[in-house]
Length: 265
Image (tube, rainbow, N blue to C red; front, side):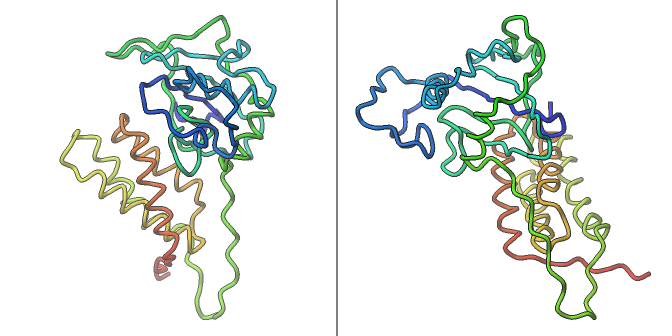
């Protein structure tokens, strides 16, 4: 499921065996004093519970008022509905040094995807827990934490007027006409599992989108969503890698804004 259009914010709690980072990396932005005993901490279940304890709130993993889905790997998907759709939250991974909620706790929101409950894969079944089958509204304290950790997608600045009246700003259609064929080349990679130049094509499309966003011709959030959906269509098992490529190329492209040529009327 595509989380952005469905107004979903899903906490993807991992339980992978991994090297535990320094305590300063466990809860980004929250220093954990040395006197806090972290013996036994091993997964996202622990860091999420620790975050809830710091805020004196219920551990989301124990929230039986919302849809919770056990994953085949032993993790947990905690589904929430964004009660304020005008506020968009970005997806992130718990290991990200830039934007993260907690170690081994991924956020699936705008530009992210989540496996639907009851889906059966070769690894096992995504099993709903308890009796609740619908996402509850995102708790206010979690919304505040997502805001604090940089998950709110800022609206791009409104471009100022051009200095020379002889230069006319291209129509949005011109920008879309330039970007759309590049996005289609990404989608076409779905026909083959490898050997299609997927990474190069996705990088080129995202870099172009970034340049158009930087020049004020495209909305960054909408461009990112379109790129993420095309990447997921082509490589559904590489969501995190695709998001990394998209974000890096969008940022690089935005630093070099450019204007598509107007078509002659």
